[in-house]
Image (cartoon, rainbow, N blue to C red; front, side, top):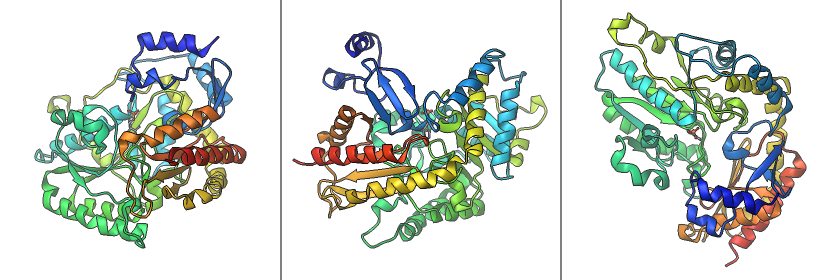
Amino acid sequence: MLNSKIIERDLSVLWHPCTQMKDHETLPLIPIRRAEGVWLEDFEGKRYIDAISSWWVNLLGHANPRINAAIRDQLENLEHVILAGFSHEPVIKLSERLIEMTPPYFTRCFYADNGSAGIEVALKMSFHYWRNQGQTQKTKFVTLQDSYHGETLGALAVGDVALYKETYAPLLMETLIAPSPAGCYAESGESYEDYARRQFEQMAVLLEQYANEIAAVIVEPLVQCAGGMRMYHPVYLRLLREVCDYYKVHLIADEMAVGFGRTGTMFACEQANIVADFLCLSKGLTGGYLPLAVVLTGEEIYQAFYDDYTSLKAFLHSHSYTANPLACRAALASLEILAEDKVIENNHKLAQVMAEVTQSLREHPHVGEVRQQGMILAIEMFKDKAKKEPYPWQERRGLRVYEYALDKGALLRPLGNVIYFMPPYVITPAQIRQLAAIAEEGINRATEN
Ligand SMILES: *Cc1c(COP(=O)(O)O)cnc(C)c1O
């Protein structure tokens, strides 16, 4: 079978996500027939290393035999059932497991069926908690510059990536935006920590000024992924936790992209030694198999909704596929592998290899920064390295790297001019070296004129 036949059929009936479809007049679509481990294979047998874990969801490789077996087993018993008024063992076990592996504060799991929906849950729950407490004036949310929390209208409103947000601005609730703590913006010579501390001052002012109207601050702990893999020092989270406590504002940790070992610890918040009021998980939760999201919270918040039906305090939010049993079994299998195989410990070695093989890129005349947090490594290209002057976005330099990498057998989908590795944890040191070589040559070519 030829790729071209499949592509033709695809392009006559599909509308792809996050894509200007006209690009496909020149940019080939890649139809995938099968996948295994880090490898994706197209219809002509060409293989690609999935260096971005298929949009950051895959943790333990494609077609992982243990996750496959868990889903097959579940399929024989129960594929899905309504979760309102009904329950099933996979969701109970998964909730027990999540509560056991997170700080003692977390005692309740509320499920949704994708990440954006999970963010909507956290936002509504925070607002609704304050309302149930008689604090109806707490209607605002604070977010960080460059943050990303999904694409549905509520999630988009608390994000700050202009490319996705600007068009829909007239439809979105207003949010307060605090300046970025990300070290890539620091003055030369200023440390990530000093910059985070300095930037925090403006967050503190915002909270002081509006605390009475603010329900929650929402952050992506340590790495703002979709905003360009921008990383910041954990001290920012520590300061934020203190100030949120002081002003009685919730802290929502969106660990959808960074949870489950991505940043080097099971959860990114651990590195700041803080506990959020709401912890949002998705993406890697099921090992990248099936859509599922969960919002964990504590007993005090849960109890604020617990009352006679006629008090109308209940959280009446739902999604059709809430806590789908197949997805829950995939999640349980994935969590079991993470624990049994000491995956996060082993990742430290892989992260070390990623650092080593990209060392030479730091000297590249058009690479402004190589930054890393655990199993995420990002390389930012600049037109003028010294001035950190970006290439005009219209030149789509990142896309050139993408096309070169595809040709060489790697899926390196950039974010603008940021090329990054966010591979499944089953990648080998040799495959990391191969990726780095492809990225380096791709960057050479993309920046040579
Ligand atoms: C991907 C992502 C989301 C949204 O999840 P979807 O399942 O794509 O809707 C929310 N927050 C963060 C930090 C993400 O990376």
